[in-house]
Length: 223
Image (cartoon, rainbow, N blue to C red):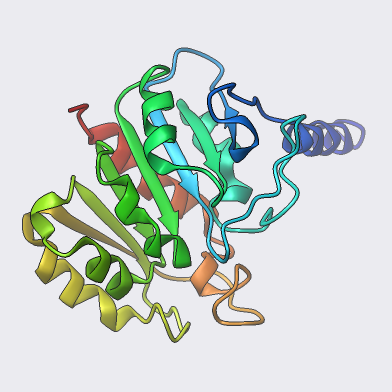
């Protein structure tokens, strides 16, 4: 067992470092991680901050690797979804079209500031906003009539000033039956309250965040 544990750690680290797949139609705007078997659907991840993933021609992500969605991209793939990490240089519409050729339904997941760009992804079969700037998303969308089924995943103690928990109830009221909310609690809270090492980034509870997203994605129907 003493030999096996370090070996497993090395293998796990190697799997995280493995480069993803570049799709010709998207180039270095995105990188794809495929599940082991036939995908049950597609998930497109949009990281927070400036959203620039710094994707190389070889399929390596060089920026935002600690972001709550990007650091868990292989977990979404392990749950059976073709998982595309989309840089802010890419078009959500083009990414959705590309992933529909791979597996439907297509769910777009954005965290934090990515919510300000997610109005460009309304043609997706479903949306998930984690720790999102909900007021900006709402303002960009305008009418909730254009929303696909939408899930909000939020930490009860998120102390980032632009994603405070108090933004969630009015957003849910605006979205009506189209919006569901999953509240998470616990984990660690370290450093800048708007960064990935705290409640804003679901630090210490990655599995629960991934489970909320994939549980929703399993129930989404392709349009």
